Length: 241
Ligand code: NAD
Image (tube, rainbow, N blue to C red; front, side):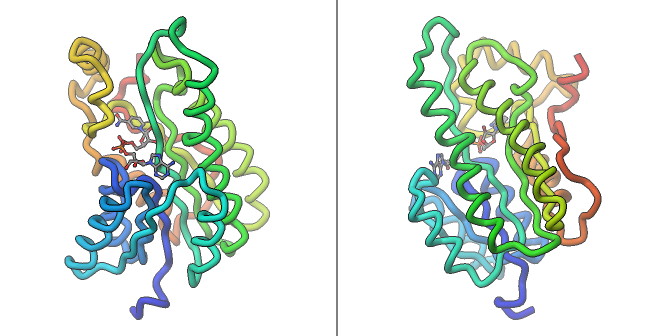
């Protein structure tokens, strides 16, 4: 398939642990991959590695909080078939130590940046387009990161609202809610908290980034039809209680 004929997917946070695995998986699925990350070197490295392996990929080193940069990126793509809103930030602090600024920071990246790219992207997508939003199992409630929990619960709400409004255009919108995933983000947890959390996960281990990438691959596939507004928990059974 010539490069211009491939479906195009933008993956945000592609320079991170989960985003890198998603990028690799979508290239294997036949997408031309746009590896977006504000960490420019990591975005370039991911795209270069995928090209070296024979895949079709380019880097988009930009900050999702920059409206003009997001709009310019979307405008220059030849087509757009899938947006994977994976970029996110996380830190741990008890409720009484949180400030309004902590909430603003998390909402700006985890929620508003996701909306921003989606809104620009929707105009370039035809019927069959897919949006996959990265929520977190934490949307169900969790201790010591209320700002993150609230931002991810908002991602679930936004996913459902987008699904309803975009279904008439043939664009399907779903979310994935990972439990613990083995990435650098987990280093924000103290060793005690990490052990505590793993004990609650029936599989007894953190998921691998590839487990999340498999779920994204399913929800972003050009042939996937009939599923929209859903939240797929990829949490090793933790939500079973
Ligand atoms: P990570 O920190 O390894 O990667 C996140 C990436 O997003 C980084 O490369 C970072 O540079 C990028 N990013 C952050 N802000 C950005 C911005 N404004 N513009 C552009 N890029 C930006 O994190 P991860 O563990 O790979 O997490 C990916 C997603 O999965 C996040 O949304 C996270 O909330 C979610 N998640 C992770 C876990 C986990 O256990 N790791 C669990 C549940 C959900």
